[in-house]
Image (cartoon, rainbow, N blue to C red):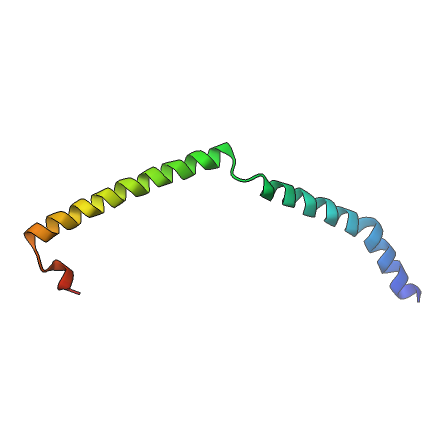
Length: 74
């Protein structure tokens, strides 16, 4: 019976508390959301995406005028 009791006691004394602390620390960090730096990066990416989207629309308009059948060429 001691071959199961000893590892179980070692697990409960050393491993379980460390595991619980690390688990709840990670859970707390994930609930905080984006940091200020991450929010700035996200905003920059959104602005870049909007700029690229406008450029794509402009390119499509130019192609529609210069080569009206360009969408049919696959």
